[in-house]
Image (tube, each protein chain N blue to C red):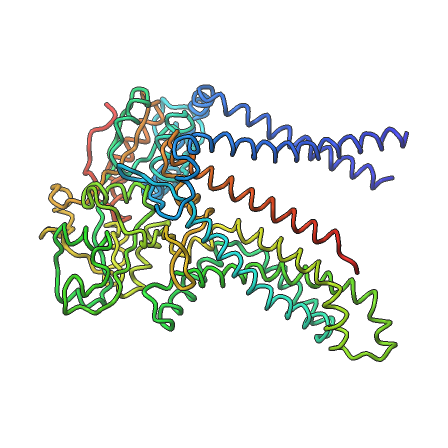
Length: 288
Length: 311
């Protein structure tokens, strides 16, 4: 009796897994098929080069994706660095220096922060951060890569803090008793034991965070300016999800332009796959 | 034991929902079926321009509040709830959805292109209003007191980046970057601007592309040295916070726009394929009647005036 139930359960789990993998494969293949017209018509040289612009309208449209790819990577890297600096410090503070009750309250607030819709972050960025940068940095516009990175960094914070906390908790469970017995100070424990043992898992967490940052659309689109130029820290830029959301709706059917957007997202998906792979490799080698 | 049963039930329901989801997917691929279905269910679907969507949304909800069921509109119509759905995603999506048969009305805030006309069977257009784009600047920009008018060439030079600084336009203006703000470059609004003003000139790639009209206007409000094309409606809602500038001596007033003198304007169209159903023509009567047109003007667009429709 039990055996039959087990089998049914097992079968269902396998079916679910199969459907999930099938869906992913379907998305990937669909992106490739939809990309083919652009690759055939424009060529990879036209899609990625240093000279042309992304200018999809007019008599001679050009479809250079490189500025947007650079913009996406630039903002995401910077945001991950911001989030890492503040996130790791916050995780240490919460785990080692605050009373547990108080820390738990803050953890639940962080969970709430993770659930705030991204458009809210974008709107707050647009109405506070953008005018602030405009006023105090003597810029021509407040919309810039820096603004986007800060907004994105705040959005990544809950994620980074929870990954860091998880690893820290593992190390504490294992070594804190011993180190207390040995009379080691808290700071020595953090620097010499916690840091060395969580290095890899934190790095894996960062790569995952980077993956999240790359796909973020709405909040970034609202504060980055969406100019199809190569990104500079205090200048405007554009991201791949941004272009897609901005332009997808107004394209007619069967246009090369639409296909070029599919190429952009295929590239995005490939970058994401590489990041996930790297993250898994890093995680696999961790020793706590 | 109980837990296992629970888990089994849960995963079974998961698999089932997936299957149901897939089933629906294959349904929609048969578009002609769906089109007749929506007619049978007395629903009307609108899809397309994000400029027109709020107008139709407003009309749809006041229409529902007034009548609730179709037979109260006209006793010949069935005793069914009025269901009008509006989804926005751009003018291009409007015509694409109409060609695919996934919508009853395409909302298009520009002229319908000849190649689109060819693909839509029995294409018919109903104009519900006019929108104009005003060239708007921030009231703190000293240009407000200097120039009340741009020539077309000056606008082209400002938007193309030829005048990178305001002082390039007039030496007495501050030596600050001209911040060009546009809507997304392949959207309906920009298409009109490109066609009516820019011609073959390209907009500078440094321009900020706003994803909505209200974002564009708030960008101008927040930036002293910004210039952009604000929709007539949205600019009117923000009177005093943005300053409209005349084009070739013609200011963007209602009279100038209706007479066609003001150049940067676009029609607000509802496009259909084939004949209207009874429900659809009843609703169109309302849209083009006094109450519907009041909604158009209350949102800041220019109404067409009452017209005989759907005969």
